[in-house]
Image 1: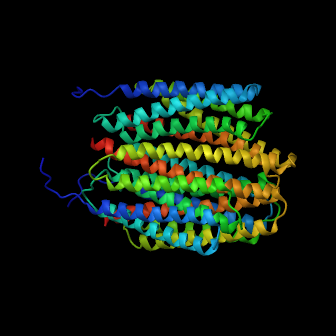
Image 2: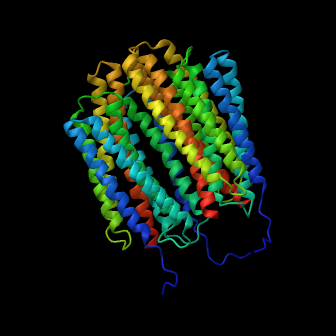
Length: 204
Length: 204
Length: 204
């Protein structure tokens, strides 16, 4: 069938920028948690990255509202943009907790969780780059879901250990929230993967 | 009017399986909280039930993406599947808290909350079974909403009492979260009821 | 183009009632936090206001399900109604925390947050009143987003200060949650503003 009205390909480029920016945020968070040096300055950089993310998200939604023919279902474009944005929001929120709670030493398992987020963001970037051709997208989605299960297990074990060992309730509150925020970032990545899966299945 | 394209009735069967599986999860949680025996083993069973729930949800969504004519609005099928799945997720999360926080004695009001969840799941199962014919669905939805208000009151009173009596902050954190997770399960059941109401009203 | 089927204008009236009721709730909360007098009685009034909000929301959704031609996209009517309802839910939840946790003195920054909520609700009411003609709606949305950023900063600073100064973990848990609930109300106002923006941009 010949397409008479050209579909808008700009959306794919915008999602590619979103994923690249998200990847940068994930890597910076991992780096901060690994070294715990210059935390305040680098969380500010994370804040700037999140701000860029907000701007791209806003552009996608504005463009969506003004485009008649979209390359895939409108509600899926909306859900993909907001779920990618949510991942970055929680990456940023994790960094913010370090500053807000004056956390000086991050436990190794928080770095591990950040590493899972980095991997998920790499998978998201790959899936998004293949979305137009529908190639291998589902494989990346399966891997993102597997990583979410892994993060779930790490977070659960870390929180259980925290309740066994940490006797200072205020320190416990801080660290528990750090784990929870990191784990929520991986949930949001799974949400984004679910949208990508939907897009591919509808088009199949 | 004669329907030329047969509507897909398989969805109703899948939602019936989801509700039956959900009911099993709710009853198991109630049972665990009532007896607090073999907690770890039975929370693992709850985990398996949740896993079955995930699989059915995934089948519904996959089928939805590949079905052209659906028995009711696509977005309502999506929302019903995800909200039923959410109820089970929080039922499972409540069980997980018992293991993760090594809670040995569950207070009577947590059993009471689980009982409200069981009742809501029974109402959901009835409503879902009548959805195709639209019979009495609204009555079940009203009852699910009433039960959510009841759970809200129980949880609020339990948490207020906890803050009055529990002087150990770490024990307080654990129990507060158990109540909150149980209460959230009843919120998600209300969300599912709202979708069912929507489906009936649209078809009226 | 001549419109042959009249669009339903009743929705605009219903959203105006919702906004007026929301404004009442926001002002009452601000007042309670300012004076901290007769808290229990006035939180009960807040509860009644929330109940009125629930009823209007329910009417909007029922009407939506029974209306064929809507003045703007169905899913946006749904999202606007539920996000305005969410703002009021969190306003009520903030009041409830005062009673549940027997908070006798609210810190000045909780009043400040309530003041931001009042301003957002005023902007929402203005935006909703102009929605039919699309006049100046976007300006109100920009201001609501700015106010959300302000609330975010106030909440973050207040919580950081709380962790520095409050050595009683149970008191800290109570106050942290009060700030978080207030901040979430401003997030929900932003969600409502995003829907309003979408409606205007689609119609542009």
